[in-house]
Every structure is written in structure tokens, then in C-alpha cells.
Image 1: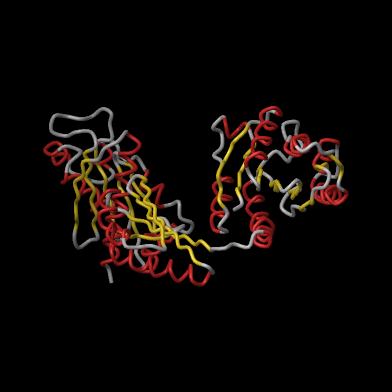
Image 2: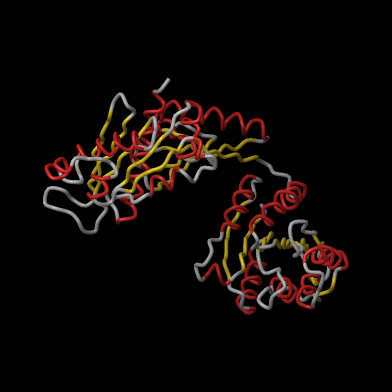
Length: 415
């Protein structure tokens, strides 16, 4: 069975300046093709480190996929280091140079020696012209080893993987099995509770595998189906997803690339409803999450960040005696925040959030993490009390996502 390895080059990865999404993307594609990935490495732009990493990869893996280090600068050393690792010459490829000149003539007109560096690849390589950038990709087969080098720019890399790498691998290594996966997204339950709900079903399955992954207020259940062909794998996946959807019920809000805010946006648009928010402890986070969705202006009217009692009194028209009697973090204040912002922002639905995000502000009666969420639709007002845990950021995030879930469940009941 073929053993695969990914090497991501770039000191910026090791400095934490960027997240290596390239390796994640390639790993998913290899998994679907039935190719076992055994190692992922991130290495700096130091020639010695890259050379030793390549030599180690060549000693233990059959397929090595590299990303990054194909550009014109001094620290772009992938091709020269691959040539050194395999004792090959670095030679100029006319097709790569022609493409480079064609691209650069449209943008700057002048080509220097740094640019031309990108036309030099290890001898014996198959040049893969990159129509999305200047740096060519490369396929090199030598001594029963395969090296496939891709640019580090994520969108260029993804295009070349889909259009070149995957077809090559399918032809070179026809998969014995096809793997398909789907992610179901759950909110309103913790990881252990999700596991309890679906455990009996999971334990009865023999041709499927599963994973449960936790994020704050968001649990993901991954289903992996494996079959001799794509049709059977897809059918297995569908049957399993349908059954888990029944089991999870209203806790399930979406799948795969869907987001909670996106699902809510679709519901608001389909029902022709508009929403506004009044936020205290979340400081605008709820509004920011809602407006991540393109086109959210169709349903999001606006919000009031009422961090102080003065703003609650003067912009939301909450009577000062209510705040004095119950405190800013209280059910009556949360209720009025939702009701008032709905009217003030000309909306069908208003949401209010008030709480103590910490680390200060707590009292003997009101602990850090105490949050009141409220939703008003002009007919009824509902309030939820939560005692959340985590640091300041997590409390604000959990409060915002619980408010979104409260809205989702309410919208599902609307005609």
C-alpha cells in the first residue's frame, strides 16, 4: 500500500503567522482516494532543514507532496533542494519560461533574473503549468518515489490539486476502496451528550466509521463511508446521515460547510423577517457573527451595543428604576433590551444579551459567566438564563452562539 507524506515549507508557518490550511486540504483529498497519509511536516526556509526533511521523507514514503517555496525570492528553495536530495541537475524548462514571460508581460513588462528562477526545475521533472500564478508545479518520478510539488498560495494549490494531482493519482493508483465523508453539525448539546444520543447506533455499524469533534457550542459528527465504488459509498453515507438526523433531531442545525449564522440567514430570508440586536457583555459579537453572511443586509437591521446603563436608559429607553432594582445583568433588563431594540430598529425580532463576561464584575449573587438572553417578536418575549464557563472570549462567544440557537429554534416554529 502506498505511503504518502506532505511537506509544507515556509518559516511563516513555524512562526505562527499563517495557518497551514494547504496540508489540511490535501490530506482530505488523499483520504478520499484511499491513500494513507502517514506524515505531515512543516519546515522552515532553511536549506539544511528542508534537505534533511526531504531525505527523511524519501526514506519512508512513496509519495511526497510539497507545498510552498516555488516563488522568485531567495527563500524559495524547494526545487533546488529537491534536486540536491536526488542528486539531479537544476535545468531551465522552456515551457515554464514561456508561461512566466507571458504572465509577467501583462503585469509589469520587465523580467529579471529573480523571476526566471521559477523556470528552473530538477532534471527529469514533468512541468505542470500553473494558469493561476507564475510558479509552475512539478511531478517527478525517480527510483520508485514520487514527488509532487505545488505552490503555497492556497487558491492556486487547490486548483492544481483538483485539476492535476487528483486525476494523476486516480490513474496511477486506482483506489481499491472509495471513501466518502460527511459532517453533521450540532448545537445545544455538549460532546458527551451527543455521544450518549448516538452511541447505540454507532456501535452497531460495521462498514462506517465516525468521529465526534468539539468546538465551543458546536459539535461535529463526522461520518466516513467506505465501499468498492462511489455509488455504494454515497448510498451508505446517505443512509447513515438520514438516521443520525432522526436521532439528533432539533439539535442538528446543518452539515459540511453550513454555518449556524448561514442557516439562520436562510430562515430569516425565507420567512421575510428582519432582526436587530441589543448587546451588553458580548460587545457586538452577535451582530458581527450574523453579518459574516454575504447578503445579511436583507434581514439584519442593526444593533445597539449598550455596554453602559446610560446607553440602556437613553438609547433603549429602559427605565432607570428597573436597572436600579434588578441590576443591568438581570432577566427584566434582558427582556426590555430585546423588546426595545426590536422597535427602535424597525425589526420583526429583537435579541437582547446582558451578562458578566469577566474576569471582573462578579458579585456574591452573580458569578462570572452569568448571562441572560432574550428574544422578542412583538407577541411574546422569551428569556433564557445561562451560567457559562471559560475565559472572557469564550463566554462572549458561547453567549452569542446560544442566542443564535435560540433564534434558530424560534424561526423553525414560525409559519
